[in-house]
View 1: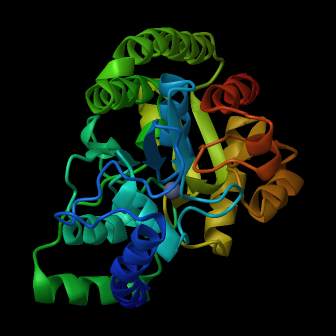
View 2: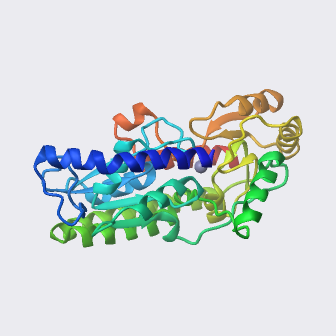
Length: 341
Ligand SMILES: [Zn+2]
């Protein structure tokens, strides 16, 4: 999978300079010094351009920037973030933007390769995983890890090249407290990239941080007043940071970024038994999931199927109607309340 990615990347990187030059020639820009930072190659009405890979940082940037910057997201709405593959146009967007925001986890290895190969110039680059205290991906009781064959293959490769490095959970945005830290860093970068509008960015940031604090307080109140502290997911579990923030324990079929979708009979049985013995009222699934496993577990236990948004991405309808991270997380407040009581 990763090897395929590298081949695709090499082809893209070969295409990018040609595409850039074509764009510049067309618009009559000179290719001076090869540094195109700040020149987006498209009409931004003199505004700075901000490019984010996935929905949460896109939305954070949008809240901070208001109408003072052009903010775009590379991942198309409703598409799976883990199987996302960049188009040549995406790479050109990264090359040409003023501020680039990405997560920096295992799913983003292709970005590190792209950034290493380009002249970043004056571009501000923000890695969300550098904004917070990262945690290692965790495999809890009953959870099905990557299949053994894949693991052996991975072990062979890592033994040959370098010592195994810990795998950090990349879903840093799932905790509103982390969101506050990331928003502060994004805000600083915007102020530096566009000093003329710094006052507006600072004002918007202050308002937005207040809203994130309110959201955090809502989750805290739900957790403080809850009958139980355990959630069960018939799905992947990308909520490590969220669960830790509010003192929740969890059981789930797969770790956060697992590519597995078919659970073993033992995994399903473990989750069903857990729900039955602890009388847990809700079985969760995440966005863009098949919901098949959650449905099976619901039928066997009577637990209600509910969605907890991990906010990797957003549906097309929600994207078009301007739904935000705060909106999705506020839906989570109600779902969590139901699951914990
Ligand atoms: Zn994920």
